[in-house]
View 1 (tube, rainbow, N blue to C red):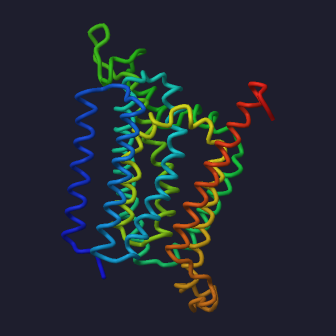
View 2 (cartoon, helix red, strand yellow):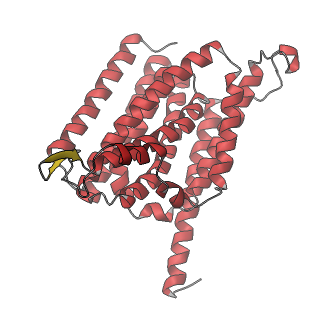
Length: 332
């Protein structure tokens, strides 16, 4: 059973309208959301994703719904990793907390556009060349290794401005101070950009790098471009509120990158196994399909993703609690 075309089109229209309404709310009333407000919004978007999965189950069956949930959770976990970098970028450029909502929303829109382009390109490539799964799988395993064992301090990497940001500084006039959430301002009668433009570019470049990881990862779960795109939308929709909800808790999730690394490695292996099943490369098994390669189900993928994130988060919180007790001298 396939998803009805009207369901796909209707879903995309509704999701775009929600994003537009969210953006309009930020523009009209920039503020620092309270923990309660952030919790309600995050809960709303999670509930919306689960309702969407239920509708997919009703219209197309459990396999489609399972692929969406697994893809959504994968993208959600990778998006949480984005938050660490967003925190560093906000601190590096001293973005006033009152206007961080707008920065995050613009970053989310940039991410959706970039990921949409990657999804279209990825779907077209996969349709024509099944061997690309070998490359995707190897890339994810490599990324997992880099995630688990970074060669340098993550914060130092972020503080090293990208070539695009450095080029922007040299080619356009940028004021020293912010002018509210504005991108353009007037200083001494001269129109110029505010530092906000640099923040937008920095976050855009970060989103581009994260898209290189996340799109191959979700294509390891489903080859449906619609499911890939909607899973990305739902993962990013609550990211802004999650940023304010987690706050200082992000610093306590010290083992989260291990959970994400395990997920990426698992999906990388799954992609390679899928490529072996579909193998057409003449120098591998004589161009014949490799039937003994493991067939990893959507349900197994979903279980691995959930267990990895629960274990990584739980271990992080236990470690943080233990460190607080040692620091306060109340126990070991």
